[in-house]
Length: 477
Image 1 (cartoon, rainbow, N blue to C red):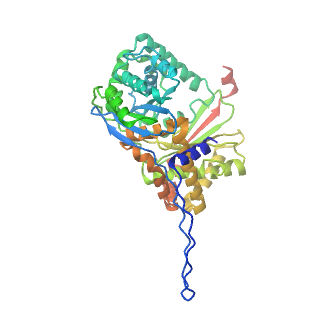
Image 2 (cartoon, rainbow, N blue to C red):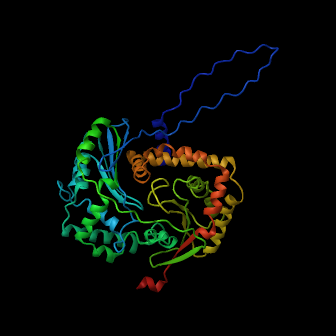
Image 3 (cartoon, rainbow, N blue to C red):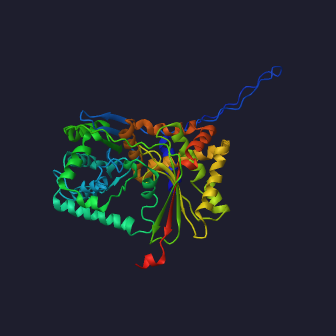
């Protein structure tokens, strides 16, 4: 339902193509029959998100996207630091720092940022992803200026005490325990798969963090991390909604313009070598009640033709009850009741930058073996590898992919649009990329899908991750 509503809303925002009443043609003379051709179909309207993009002298990337449909705005600040490139021996630090950003700044005490948003009738959140850490607020339009001031204030500098640091170390440690260590299937597969599928430490370490690394963080570590990664030159600011552009530009300059730039260290190499042999890993889980299976295939590089092809491969193979894997594993074979997965479990196909896996995962009965499921998966994948998909399958995949894209853009009262604009500015210096995604999907041919499946859905490019319930005696302990 959410996807359908998102697609309908997006279509309304894009506008409908004007139609003209067809005029009855004058018939030609009888002695000179004329060939009458069918009228061309009306062009389908495409996504056209307004994009006003510029940079401040200190390097801050600014994206404005005006929409006067409702008197509300989304403000987002994205920092180019995520799980992947956090310092060695400080695993989990990117996530810890997300929490620290709510502990007080130069002009706001602990938790005052949250109270400021709530008093203005808004909502807010922050998150740590593979390639960025973000903070956003959704507020009525008349509260836009205070939000810009508040975000600039904490970008200018944190005021963190040892007590606050210790408190947040405890919060994050408890989060790890609740969400991973003491949770059945905790971290499966989003946290587990990268650690076994990748070889580069930056892509393969424990993103949630080792508890000993979290406990070892000091105030000096916090200060150094902030100075390095939370500078305007490593950030993007996005404003989406009902506002006056010139007024917003003046506020952005007033509050963010004076912040000093900071030289950025060279980003680490996060590339992955081509995988030439299937990997298998079994995780013993004393809290699990049924076996689980995930298969992950290394993705093509971002923004390549094959990357766009994989968006459609995902729809053909995995997404929805009409997908080939669902039909084979659920409907025909009854090996599982549900299939899940896709690209980028912490976001979507479009808002990451670096190595990634396309992952499908499921839970199954102990009487069904891993090899039996893999054989069925291989049989389905082979259909894409052996011959190009037919026109109707490709057309359906495009419709599903567009619907998902529209739904993501319109999600959470326009936060989805802000997310794609900010991440595209941050990674590619190109927020207008959002308006070309549909065109790239249209360029994908059956032959490209076949080529992509042959290279990226190879068994040698696959990691098989299983979860096995621990023996009964282990549970008793």
